[in-house]
Length: 128
Image (cartoon, rainbow, N blue to C red; front, side):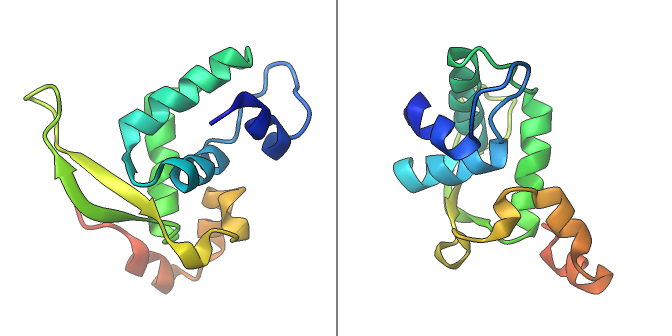
C-alpha cells in the first residue's frame, strides 16, 4: 500500500497523529487479500514511520482487531500456518467480509461495538 493512498484516506497529515489501524486493515486486506495479524501490524508500523507518525503497540493493534472480528468486519479464512517461533501460536489468516467493506464501523470499531445491544454483543464474541 502506498503512503499517498493512506494520506487520502486519513486526511491531512497532523503531527503526533497516526493512521487509523482499522482503516489500514480494511485497505490492506482489499489490496493484498487474506493475511495474518502480525504481518499487517509490521506493514502498518512501517507506513507510520514512513509518514513520521508514531505507531501504536502490537497489543493495541491486536485489541483493535478483536473489535473488527466481533463486529463481523473480518473473518478467519480457515488457513493456518505454523509460526516462525515454535513456542508461539499458529498464524491465523483473516479476510474481509465483502458485505461490510463500506460499513461505518471501520472508522471507530470499539464505539460501534459498544452501541450493540448486550445480547447481540455476546453472539459476536470469539470462542476462547
